[in-house]
Length: 457
Ligand code: DOR
Image (cartoon, rainbow, N blue to C red):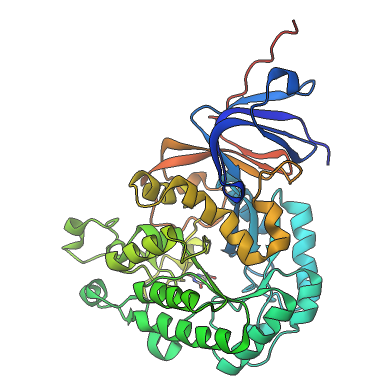
């Protein structure tokens, strides 16, 4: 599609694939990146619009390997249209959507439905993830080859683990031939039982059933053994414990093909937030309340776990950040903690949450951008490399953000149908100014500044 020529001037360009981090200009046109560096007036095409990028960061658009768009079947929670607008507002230009829909994404027909809906309703790229097992029931492998031919980019039964070890072994065996990862939601159910939050003092205080760290770690250990035995492509979804980081670290050191993701909430908030006090111990002292918007699987955990996850992300043991955007309708959360649905609406707060780590000097800006772009592209495979690049000739899927803009989370302004976030009312620092997909502006904030056209000499 032909698009306008636009030059973004004097922005901090971060392009991790080229290890580029410097102030310069980005020229886009015809849906592609035309150049980065210094784009003088003489190099600007006729009618080129100019954006003032000073003080802003420009990078490849973010890629989310793990989100729930709820279509088909749960359109009252989210749609591809609303989820893609939320993604664009959050700086994402590619969303990989999980198959816990109704029907689940376990046939080529449902994959085609998602593609068709995305073409019709979405301004950003939507890549479906197919089921590992038929109906996500865990008993029989889905037709993985049919799903791969139809265009799924990975396999997962997310929301549920691939419980049967032999089915997981087979799935991993096929994953290498198909060149697609198996993203497993690691949860040993005989350990998590009826748990609704992390095992620990907060759960005890509130009288809620806890989920031990071992519920996650036991299945990760199993999957690593199976990845080693098969040479398959294992991707561990949403790591949440310090022990999980160690397991992935050791597996990588042993040369096993494993990649892993972590979510913004597991990197930034703890189980103290379950009290409904936004992590403040004083309010927690009463212990009479809880906030169901903190209920998520895997659960929010201790500060020690958060610290280990941040370290694992910073040093590259964890390959990427994924949102696990899990929008829910209001009534699914306006119930007791036990009855509430698991999940947090994340797409529109992800960047602001992650920048807390950058401002707090726990993660470099370059590493944050890498784990949101090149990291997930590597998990998807070499054919997706262009989605995380600002090399001339690649698609102009880019994000422009202000790392210092302060804003207050107000879910009434969310594009997502899911207003379920514990961050409501929280002040975050850092926000998207504009998102471009194939050169088109698919989201712009009031902060976007176009320069007045210069008069011809
Ligand atoms: O909190 C979660 N919500 N974790 C999951 O694994 C599934 C997700 C959902 O689909 O709501």
